Length: 293
Ligand SMILES: [Fe+2]
Ligand SMILES: [Fe+2]
Image (cartoon, rainbow, N blue to C red; front, side):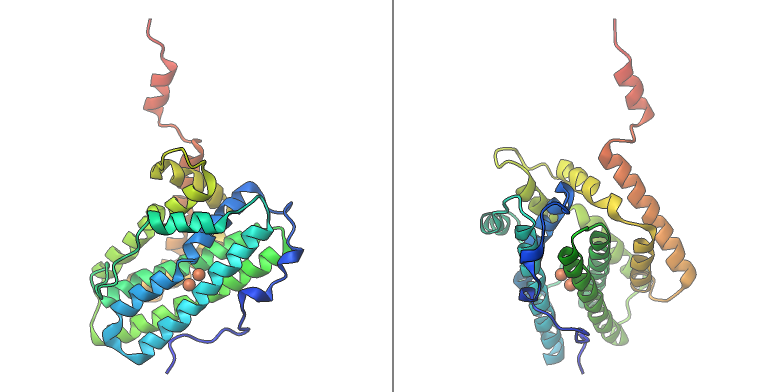
């Protein structure tokens, strides 16, 4: 039995015609996001090592699934790197990748999940893959380069299959050991809130900022969110909700999906406005307008 469904059209990073990529269709913010993601995806082997250690007790079918997943994630990093390089602007991948690996450690491969259990790990993985597929859909729909769109579409499909794989592993695990609603929500929502942690923000800082300025995670997160969040449409969040809700709540419900999509939409709009500095708290505004003496 295979947990990871094969791709409808298997592909390699070398399949795309990078020579046809033009630089004009890539705005500065899209390039910034692509470069950041190229770094994060290029660390696939570390993610694979960690998961193989966490799932070691579950045997060969689980290891085979992670091995194949690891190979596919490696191709994501390669394709994004080549796309970001082809889109121009001078992307010194090797140098920033070394700095990324030196600057941000991934979880220890000691066989313990940072989510507290194998089931918790799987909930977190489902959330990450669901958000990754949504992310690539949003980028695809705002990319004006044909090859860029093809690559981002291919990645979106892969991430949805990866979600399916972790979901199948989660179902297998929960058939043996029940996961409570509280545990699902704690891990799942917790993982969503980690999106602005160092793993992505340090990469964003490396590809964007002159090396002599200090790394300030919150400022980088605002810059990154301002570049990314306006690319999401409501349909993207409906897609995310359909994948995320069954994992968070342990059951399928169209009403839950709709409600959760609306919450995601509001949260994203609020975050985007805060990132742009468009929302200023009234008390603060009064203070800046009032000049003593
Ligand atoms: Fe990926
Ligand atoms: Fe993935």
